[in-house]
Length: 477
Image (cartoon, rainbow, N blue to C red; front, side, top):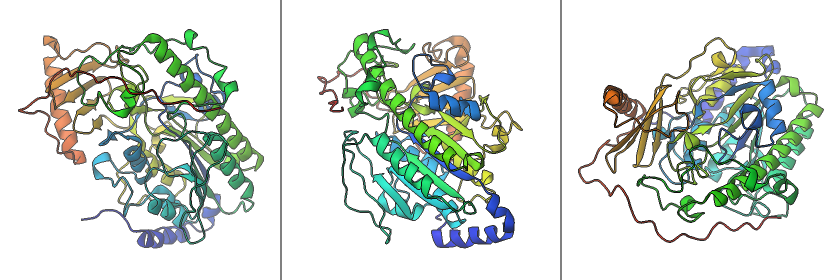
């Protein structure tokens, strides 16, 4: 049985709800949703990283609630950003999504049907059909892939809902998307009609290109390496030869990883400057005080942690994301360690807008946590990557299982947040390993994951690594 709600039925459902709200509908908040691409949770200065410059995100931290343990559920393909965005947009878990959002109800669809002016710009990794259903109005839409940030192919939405042929220009992608967001905000003259603006940056995804003045802010030699830096991952995690892992030669050198970090921080700082422009345009409209602002990322990134570069793992650096929520009547300057999924944002936005959440949505609203009515949200977190990795996190202990090699890791995240000390082999931890394996199997069943957690034909624990591929070319200005 298909549990997705078709858009026509959805429109009827929301319209009836809107009428029931009557005059209160005019008081619903606007929404500005800002999404980063491949951004680690530890790359915001105000949240504990003194080596990066993010003044505008720092201001968001001061004005809202920051979730320090927000997660994605993972991905079943190397391009983790595709399923992660599908989850965030549909409010559904990894094993019950269509990556192209076929027949899915997205939160922009709900807002559109509920009387909001919806506008999208930037990266849309889930197919043109779902974009058209979500946004009747959109410009500079990037349908995904890896492109030079100064020549990103973008399209606009035509009156018939189709997209124009792609075009390119010399602007950096973050500037281009910010310009379109600002243009939309300036067009919103009717204060009685709420809007929902979705700005999906393709930064800081590689190639890590930033304008020269932002590159100049970072001296690679002075940047500290991640605490869990390794020259090479210690065993075959199943994805040792994926594209992301070929961006630097094996073994990783400290100098090479510092160079990547400098480029990464530079493109984040540049994106932060464009976020500042968008937020200033919002303030200039006079509607900032009636607008909910959300900042999140589609997934994290290794960038030298555990000897890896990409996001194709279930370590914290890859599945934990930044998440900030602020707006009218919501606490400012608050941080919470409540665990949540990115797909919890759909019902959160619906509740903040006073709209009922569609039955197809499986996320849980974060509003009680944001308002400090509740400290705990999810007791456990399931993470998955293809058929190679599964993990369960109970808030303190995290178990990672590699079914293809019958290997288990156990980390105490309270004492070892960087996942450096594997406790799985310690005799005193055997009961905890067994308990978490049981919980992992239960969560798999709950979320529809049928992957066996062991195999009769394990792959080699170590594999010979191929000669390194060429590093992604940096052709930016």
